[in-house]
Amino acid sequence: MKIGVGCDHGGFNLKDSVLKAIKDSNVEYIDYGTNSLDSVDYPDYASLVAKAVLNKDVDMGVLICGTGIGISIAANKYNGIRCAHVTDGFSAQMAREHNNANIMALGGRITSSDDAYAFTKIFIQTNFEGGRHQKRLDKISNIETEQSK
Ligand code: RB5
Image (cartoon, rainbow, N blue to C red; front, side):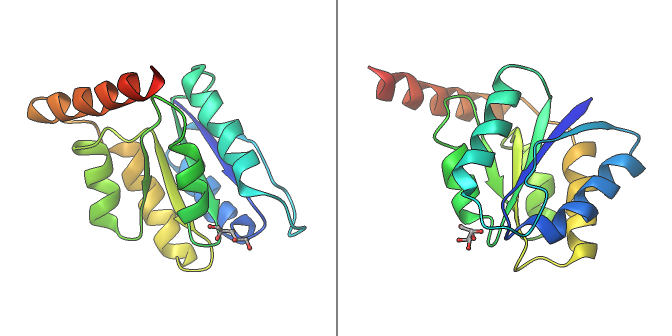
């Protein structure tokens, strides 16, 4: 498994905890930046990671901005991306089990390093349950198809 990680300046300080959780899980990753506290635009990093997931360069992604809101909104503009804005461990688990989320978004200004580490481990180690949840994801795909017309 390979995880794509991207952040803006508001998420930069939290990125190390996310990368550590990935490394400690013996999973590979690609770091799509940003790599400093200099101001950047979160849609650019959402695009890099969303495209990497859709192209199968990575299996899943983690995105971080100040709140996790803007970067998740941007990522979810891509058909096929299910980006979950996560602020607790239960949601990290449900995002995978029920929503088959392929990207998790975190907020660097609202989530502690310890929590980011824990949420990342949960997210990458939890599998989609399928079953009744697949029917609901199919309905999301139908919405995307309808919107593309
Ligand atoms: C950048 O200041 C901030 O707006 C961004 O990181 C994010 O929180 C947007 O949702």
